Image (cartoon, rainbow, N blue to C red; front, side, top):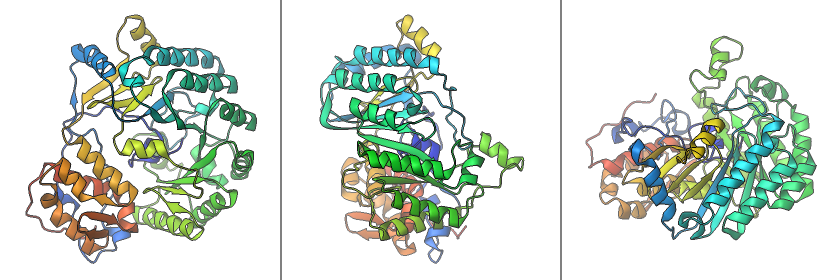
Amino acid sequence: MSDASGVSSAAAQAKPKFHHHPGSMEPPRIADYLVRVGCDPLTEAFAKRSFSPPWRGSRPVEADDVDAVLHEIYATPREQAAVAYLHVPYCQNHCLFCGFFQNVWRPEVAADYVDDVIAELASKADTALVASAPIDAVYIGGGTPSALPEDQMARLVRALHDYLPLAPDCEITMEGRSFGFAPSKAIAVADAGVTRLSIGVQSFASEVRRRLGRKLNGDDVKAFLAELVALDRTVVVCDLMYGLPGQSAEDWRRDIETVNDIGLDGVTLYALNVFPGGPLSRAIASGKLPAQAGIAVQARAYADAVDRLEAYGWLQVSQSHMVKSQRERNRYNSSIKRGAPCLPFGPGAGGQAHGYRWRNVINVAERRQMLAEHRAPVEGLALVPTHHGAHAAIAAGLEAGQLDLAAVEALRPGFRAAVAPLLANWTEAGLGELNHNSFVPSRAGAFWIGNLTSGLSAGLDSSPPVITPRGCP
């Protein structure tokens, strides 16, 4: 699993898909995001990292109206370029850190799965939503897409070209893991049209990998990535995770040196988030694994990694993503942050368009049954809140390293006045710099990006508050 599209966890960031959440979540308050000046902004600004979901405040569509609303969404042309997400809901094993495991991979499911998705692509190809404007990027995620046999994966990628209005320079990313991914498969998918391989690594430290349930040791993963780079057929990126149980500062330093030495085009840096009740949480609670690193350790690991990579000549293009070569664009993830339309294909894929968000039903058998009954196989269809565009502008601006305050104000008049005390506080505390119409997060502010997004999003529904900074955690 790899590539970020959110900030809640490594696994969630790795999944460019959307899950339905009720619109009744407690809204954030500006006062909750003030920090005490004099704290170490990197390690003490907040007690924990928070996540500001773009679906907060969404209104679910009544069940009886879902089919009609979805029909209208697909019948309405779009004017802007879109991205597409194709989900492969199978994994070769359940990694301890992942909260999204669904189905164990079995080779016999491959042909039927690909047949289903190609049929879906064909059925949607002529709809106004799909056909009316180009698609700039496609992300094939999971699950473990690289588990598919090379002939089936190539067939799937060719179908994307057959049925979707892909832009001439469309970025097509395929997620994968090193286990079971032979170089011949990389060549086959590149020949079919994949332009970018994103490999889930998490760590090169063999003992850390073993604890997580990864099948290969670190040296094998290094050799595999080096083979992909040497093929020079696609962009090659990977993801790394900090804060893992038993991961030392030296392990993390070597991981950063390794991605630089291999010659990768890009790397994404994730903080571990332990899902309550998940397999990693249970292993820690039972004493089978040491606890995950504390927030201060994670903060220093993040800052150290960015500093080291920049010293090696890498460029930070978003909060978590670093690039070494000019051909690495990370287009899908940046488009999702901006709120671009996303066209979903495959069980479990999430989409957004025309003010709505939804997810394809992930249970394969249930999905087939709904299609047989001529029902839309989706769940969680919801109308996004009126300030969704402003929230996307906040999230995308902070991710890119410079928030255009005037742009948000144009979408949500009164925003500047509401968040003025917050921005002044963060500037004084060292979380960023305020330059008239822009706010630029510092390295510390970048680490706390979810908290900054949550605080500023609170200003979308607020008048200027009377607030008092809280103490250091």
